[in-house]
Length: 192
Image 1 (cartoon, rainbow, N blue to C red):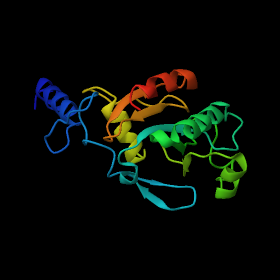
Image 2 (cartoon, helix red, strand yellow):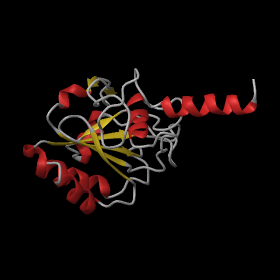
Image 3 (cartoon, helix red, strand yellow):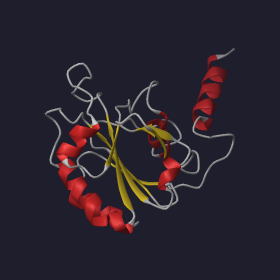
Image 4 (cartoon, rainbow, N blue to C red):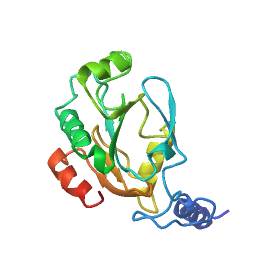
């Protein structure tokens, strides 16, 4: 096979990779399943949560460092206040811990429900996941895929990358770590 033919085949495969079952879905970022409701997360209690329990809610997904990590910032307190303030209007914050960015899993205990209660977080905290790579969690791979482009998915570069998911389960915003809680609140209010 000629090099140009191989290149064309690989290029075509790359372009079609985000396409699920040959269908391009109508979401602001391109291809992928129509919504997040078939994905599953595991809470720190060990309970599996199918995302369809959040149908009709506005969701903010965020990857965070382990709760005992020194990199945990006041951003979590600000997210907590946002969750409390807008809870009755349908906002839910879902935080997934990740050991990929500066805090490895061997140095820190996994948090317990007691630790979360002690810190008084009202939002959901999920067990650690990988957010990048081939071993990345399916939900986070989906986030990367739908906010990427046809050639590649954008890797998550650090903790506190945020994804806003509308009430129909569609990813409508990807916000990088430097986006502050105040900026996030302004963006989130467009969809609330």
